[in-house]
Length: 123
Length: 342
Image 1 (cartoon, rainbow over the protein chains, first blue to last red):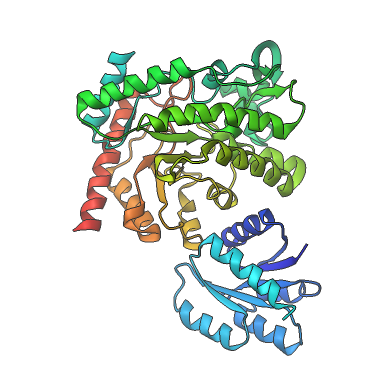
Image 2 (cartoon, rainbow over the protein chains, first blue to last red):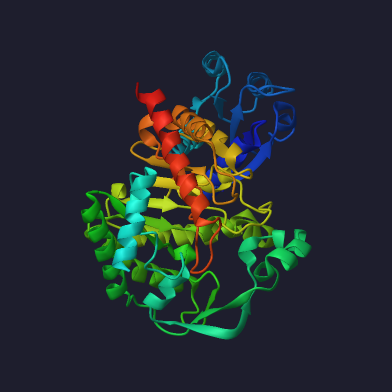
């Protein structure tokens, strides 16, 4: 069962994503910011991270993932009423995020992106 | 019954409601009515079923429950499934349909809806002693309910499937068996509901979930974000949710994360059965404007958190207050529509 690390400082978002993905058969672990997430990267198959967060934000986390040589694909999320999310998503993409998703997102879109990201590991 | 249905339809129209129903006058309750329309169930007067659907609020507020909601403290007798389940309520539902259609015709209204219970909420205080297989039991219920659903839709009415228990079971199942336990329980019942709805156009179906209409603290309620990903799997064109009470109003934020799928409609509660205080129309309008901003103005219908009387002889607010709330709902919707469609 693929293991997915979901990182967001908003528990509403984490719960939504967790329920959706657990129902689809994935194992989910959660973190509330990039600092906590950086300690949970071992053994995960996919990272889904918000970008605007306290402590270590999503952009710094993606940079850290790449700097430390983790091969795990990353899906970056942002938006949901927060300002300037588009430019953050562009930065995430430039840093090597597999995909970016603007909030609000359709649940089917997130599921499809997760499937694609997990499939990309063998590419 | 026909006269009373006609009167309640007229009263809804006078209050400014566009999409009316029969006041549920043709049923004894929102859910257990259906046990009288099915074979297979028998009442067990000597049994006591603990109301696990209250979750841990039963323990957390034990003194309150004993004082103000004794049923919540002790439970009540329920039903048992002791034989094959089959629908036998054709005469009853056809009478309900005929009464509502006659009322609609007399009032010159084209669209009305009838409520029917969902598989997850059927026999919520019942046990299975016949099938001894959860899937077979739940799908037998779904097959029976399908006959009622088809009667309603084939008569040209909108079907509202009521499913309070889907959300109500969250706290009990998660606290006793974990998230996976709840997901498995829900997954089976949503699969069964979609089985019962197969072939019915989604735009003829509304799906209502809530967190229980009883006047209790509701601390054990599920968070909406834990329910929405499951709710959206139901093949319905519209989703009716609580959004007008102090325990759930903040959950509009869920729609900052989740985009309503194309072609679907959200029916947020903008007046509530939880309090006697009548919502100011501007509060109603503000709530609607907020939802319109999140899911699109074409995709919002103003609704109530839940019904105002779920069981024969029980009412959550005085009828005079209920009608005032409906009038506030309609006035608030007019204010919001004027702002959105100018």
